[in-house]
Length: 287
Image (cartoon, rainbow, N blue to C red; front, side):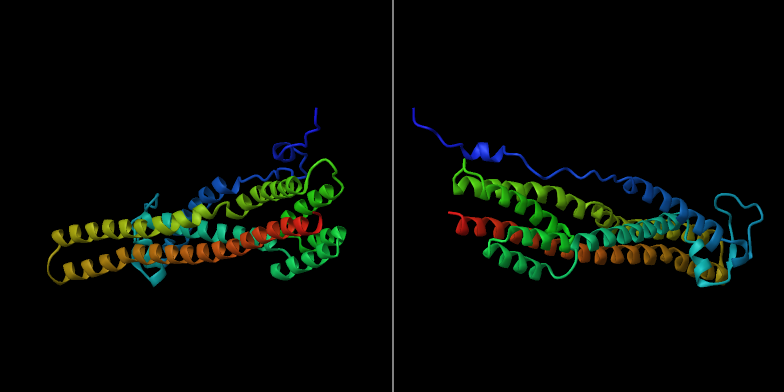
């Protein structure tokens, strides 16, 4: 019986150096809860402090009826109970902006990605795989991690005498894909909070404004004369704080979401180019 070569399936089942990365994501549920609590504390005890009003409510409680705000900031307190929710949403956005900035900055690594890939291509063209791996260690980013995983398999396939060139290229490609599948989720994690708050914050702001308008027109029906017009104008002004806070939070969230997705797209492009570099280099040098 003629000897048969291992199929591409057997190459795909070869051992892999890629190991799953264990990363907890407790911040995804702790941060929003803590931010809502902090938002309420800011609204009730900082913005709504008795010292910020000329006629504070002596009864206190969850939502004291403070009157006579001394500043524009203290007027925000009278926007109602939607305000602390919006403050919590804003703090949540700030928290995840900082968290994503640190994570994506680390994933970007050191130096320019395009320059890093050119250096690896140069070393591979000279058949110096160890030097290429050293460049990955210097890069210290997601592109470097994926490239390093592929280079280890690349080096292993050079000495493999059981598979043909096409099967070896498939094995390298599979290694790169597995490494990519572990890196990309880490980059995109928690971005859903920014995209969700970008949509919800505006609606919450409008809800607070509508509630404030309902309250203002109800007060208008009970009063009369010039006092009624004054109460209405004050009520509308206070209600619009909800809209301003909601739109501001939404705009900030959208801007940061787009910035992060642009950075992630750049890293993803570098990862794709890394895989193409490895497979094309091996196919041309080790036929």
